[in-house]
Image 1 (tube, rainbow, N blue to C red):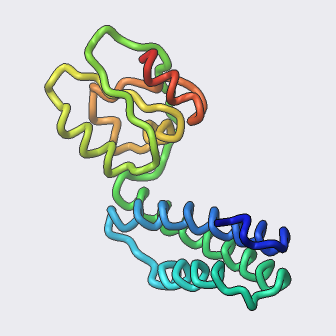
Image 2: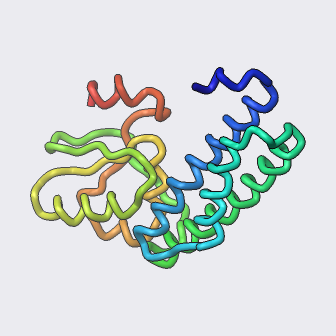
Length: 169
């Protein structure tokens, strides 16, 4: 397990790299769902994962890899932005309703705008409203989603309140 790495500096840097890779992989997957990929980012994920298991790397080498993880994190965020804006338009200032209506509804969270798009298509004309929660709030700013009259607002607060807010919804 994680605590098997006795040197706490090495252990902490490995964990920091791992968390960076997790976010990077999620964003890369969202971009891939829209048809955008960066082979350099994909190759780095493999390189960095392998490095977290390499007991010959020093703390200084892992610091350098942490910085490289950040660089690739910026690349994958740019890739996801390009994917989202090419498919859904450039975000624009938008007023978002934070109240709820009396219709049956679905509350969606996460970051994958293609999931939202599929949900909106599947619920179109059914009388079911769709609300975002937390991380999905920025979806309201993309022009492509404004055509859905049943995409009606945002419910709730921070992502970590989902367990109670989804239940109360």
